[in-house]
Length: 221
Image 1 (cartoon, rainbow, N blue to C red):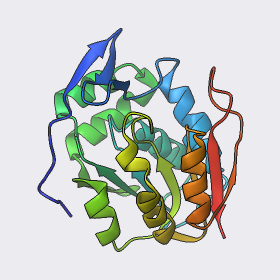
Image 2: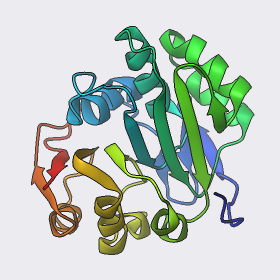
Image 3: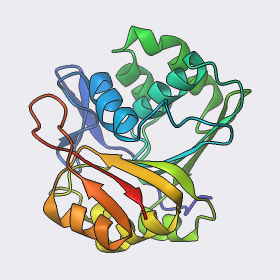
Image 4: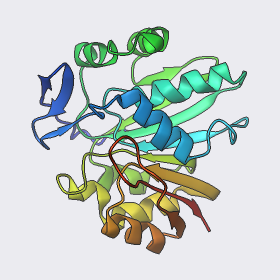
């Protein structure tokens, strides 16, 4: 699916990290983005413990692809030989060169970054089915036919990109979550948590990554 309304990522580099000019927000934590991904999105969704054949992760905000690579690596290292399904919604995709530069920060992901850059954002391998849906999630997510077992809610800050954290988007997330499915996000903003509760999730506030006191996580039902 492609809404045909994608725009250039429009980023600049600060201290070696990509920052969105449009939202004045970094693409990943400057305090070790990979560690944040593992703490928030993997740990917050109780992964790899919940991995099973046919497992489906969905994500708001593909960015550099960091979250995908961390999940894919964890999937393979956990001995999973079936296909991990990963769907991401991205309105402002990076180009291949920008992604390569961003991901070069983590040598431990180099093999997976190389495979992603070679395969592109619509990719099928023996262990991964990737579908990056390009366009405004307010249009593309309601049209999506899938249901995720785990959500990575990783848009830019709710204060700077409120459209991606609206009650309508959170409701759509709930509607596209499998029974007992989960979500995790770095933000603990009250209006986001309330919207997720209204969408049907039981929401908690675990400890955040780095200097962030809290994050948000939850289970549907």
